[in-house]
Image (cartoon, rainbow, N blue to C red; front, side, top):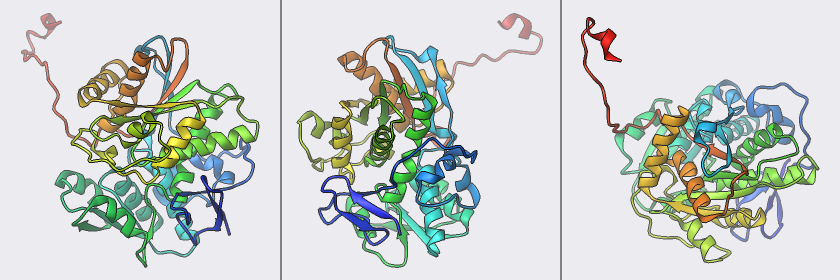
Length: 382
């Protein structure tokens, strides 16, 4: 039986007996010393020896292994920029890493129904991975979820429950339910799957890791996974230094940024506002405290960006790099630009920006400059 441990107080528990520590903080897996693998499995399953389950059947087996792209036309402020394109995962977001591992573990433990609380990428990802592995899936969504988003989730055939009430309370309530193995944003399995993105980044750079990694942050689960991977790789002597981790949030809903700026150890819930980066608008992040610990341990930081800056980042990523990303993903690139303005990242540094999700699931309005010409006039149209 695997062991999970609290990052904060250090208590250990047998998995899956607990998903959170007695002190209230989230747990993560301890898997001993890691090593760069010799195995040739596809995607994240290359690191299966450092994960608590083997690759599942179906689409979950294709999770991870996303491109790390040098993007010189998007260099800004003199940095050497690399983009980790998580939109290349099967359902178009980084969530597939955690969903694939959670579904694989559920199947190994004889569980026939998994679930999650989400209004976007995590719901789609969990439902898709469950479908591929032959498991039932229950998705709890807010009652006021837009129909367009709901249609993307429904495509994979899960049971969908539109729940009235506070979204933060819905998350807590799901952990108390029987009959469904809920794999929410900060559960140990999801965080273990999401740490593989840092394995891939660090292995690509060998022991000389990038100076900084910038990512959009919502619940803090992905940031937690990346931090865990860095701790493991450093302990094993596979990397010489720790990359600085930077969290970027939308200014309308930035509880982690506020707590970091106030030098607090704990994140307090806030009254979040409306933002185009709706999928990371988490006013009460369940892994917020662990995210703060990750930022401080790596000498990183936190920054918030406006919706106008997010839109500008989306346009720049598309027109200078050819990347179509969702608004929440563009928060990371907008955050990099803000960090450069503040002098927290400097010219000459190597920076990885994680593009967490594809923009092909979003409908947006674009100013179209198109001329109508006849076939005969085509030659002179250029």
